Image (cartoon, rainbow, N blue to C red; front, side):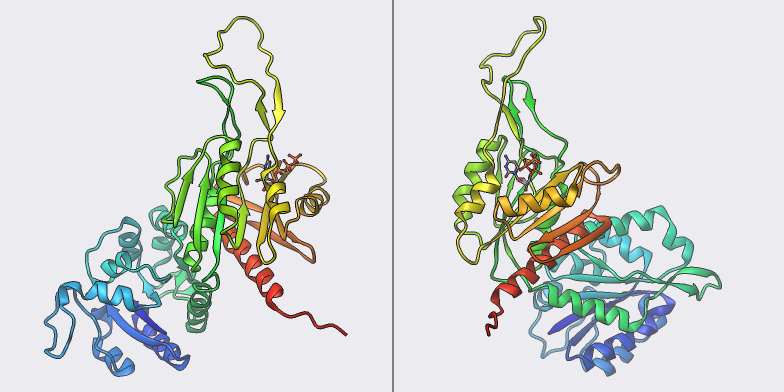
Length: 406
Ligand code: CTP
């Protein structure tokens, strides 16, 4: 296991030495990358002596003669060889550079060039931490899958008291190791994910749709990618940019979504149905735009229940996860869907609660399986995606564990 430890310019920079030490104790090889301002606080020699590796201090350095790497592409070499990038302490400026994608020095270039998981442990003055600019940069990074190890509250080097003190060494090391373990736990799985709403045409310009934004499904796809899965995303109309999945299929109607999913279901080891498939579609969509001539009566007919169809077509070993949007008798209704559609788990959303669910950034609910019910307090959809995948990893492990019979 090899990680890059980015050290940026703050009083807490000296604590990075202890972090490097603890990581080495856990068998992790550490390549330290220091920003110019970090070197005002700690000398690179400290890290070089601790890690036994040359510390990277600048973008274009004079390489020693026995190096095989040309300095101009060194960041690519490091980016490809590391299992994770940890930045501790991370200053407000570093977070801003990462959020904006500014490749101004070795560390920010490495951040852009690596596909390995990234963990940042911010440390700064309490007002800088609370500033909306910092908070919105953190939110962006979180959305892009960066793990943030929140700073602690306490006395700060600037003389103020509040949150902004670098998290404890153990907390940071544990967060990194957990992220490293997670980064591979879906390797070998091919996950088929449906997302977004469906649009059912009424006439060439009008449709019957719903308020689904697709955010939950896209968050699950992104998280699954980060955890090593091969991902196929089948999406109804959304305004979102799809993550770099293996295959992205854009559909509009529930019939198209059904076809796209049925065609790919056989190759998927896990299928997660987050899409808000329209339950009804106009029975006879008009070929021409319907004129406004008095009241209009639309006849709707139920669409095919795609998830139930997948449930009856599933092969042994395939995992199938559904969602349930409910407004009443939540758990009872969700459990009924779990059984009727032959699912391994169902994610229950209470869509009657304001501020969560459809269209919003946050969600809450419950993950229900045959044997347990995991409560999900209100959190971002990215965090919830992580919880859903954790539950799936657990289901897979239970499946693989041989049952002991008397
Ligand atoms: N679903 C589906 N095909 C449909 C309707 C829903 O595959 N035509 C899937 C959804 O993607 C979701 C799950 O079924 O994963 C539950 O959707 P929901 O609308 O809550 O359930 P319904 O079975 O439609 O039941 P009802 O609307 O009556 O509660």
